[in-house]
Length: 378
Length: 245
Image (tube, rainbow over the protein chains, first blue to last red):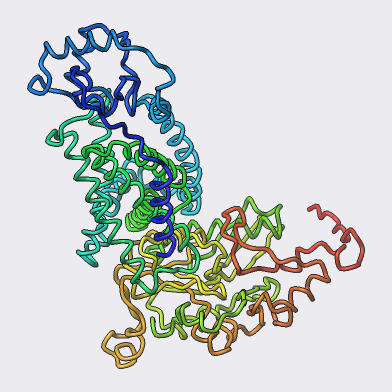
């Protein structure tokens, strides 16, 4: 928990040392300077969080289109706030504004790099990195379970049937977390906040990619905006519950993985919190804080994903896989597919015993290793 | 069961750098299963549940055959996959390296069972007993010692180790094929045994090293298969004349 407090400190420090980048609009008479556009595009239209729009190269139609529908972080502006005529006059104003390159603020130079496309590119690399290491680690777990040794029995059992058992287990034991439901409903609920919250966030991202590919800012009432916000809050609630439990559970240290467990919980907490803060500040007037916190959000997500194959995050795919393999093995033994025994107290033990026997014989008498038999299966 | 599991917090008060390990000398093992029975008696395990078992292995074809007894028990790995697979953190690694399943925390999820590459974790939905469940011995003594429907495995007899005793299987072995002790203590029986056997070229090996679990349990291969050159004798064993019928 001390580590978590430490991270809080770093977050606070980061916020403190990065100066607020907002430019206050100054009261002038022209249409642009009095509009809310200034908040992001700067008093001289040379950019703030948004790009410079002085001497705009857009056509009047494109300009109107972007004002009405938004683009990236830019919200849509309805005709009630800015009429078509005003938009046209503002367009002419901007065409005639002076181009002052020295005024392009650093925040825009950073922000300009964080386009939807660039962020997507970065995350693609990050995901691929995590996926490669995740799959390597996952294959090791499957090897530990001795799936290869079980192949002859699985063939007799039927691969289709085995996949059916595995899928059922992945859904019931994995997605619905049956063992937790049976043992403790409150814990199941807290775990569900995170599990289903994160599933919801992933689903929301896919839906946004389909229905809002430019990722234009939407109204809070829009389902595509509201749904991920709710999911984010659910995950945050769940993470806070886990952090409290980590503090109070005297047996949370299993003597081996505590650091990796903390890392996952901490990174998840920072990711969700910075995401919600980004959103809240974007809606408030202090736009200057948006960029640093949004940057922090991106860094947190990157750290969370990159470290995923090595932290407790991997339980999300390792535990369901392991339970599914246990269920498949149980089903194979129960089906009685000519294994030479009727019961097995430890699912998979017979295949693993054979593997141990072959391993030892290979070591002590390699020339006999191709003919190894177990006389019985204790 | 929980009462006999010394939790690692208790060890924090008495930090030791011990690294408990068991060495099994396959030359000495005669496959009598005394360890299996002693373990069952010590832990009061149900029907069909064996923490310490002996694999009865035949290899090769006549006339080039061998039989080998391989005693198998929890290896108390340095990097235990069961512990990492447990979604409920019910498996703990004590400071002396003993890996235990906390019977109170375990929910019987079953992830650890597949994660153990040695098949040493037992999980049964229902269990049978040898005697009538209402027999006073079963009812009052044996059954209450174990929680039902949770994962369990060899504890290296942690309750005995904490008392300074050897595990039950070690004590029971009539041929002293099992040597138990602290690897970090150069004066312990296991350390001295390894040094002594090392002089004749016998080097302990671990099960399934490619699994990357770094077991603490070790084995010494049978002497019959050992290269005699390392014993300071002729480099080549006398070649038996081929018999033709």
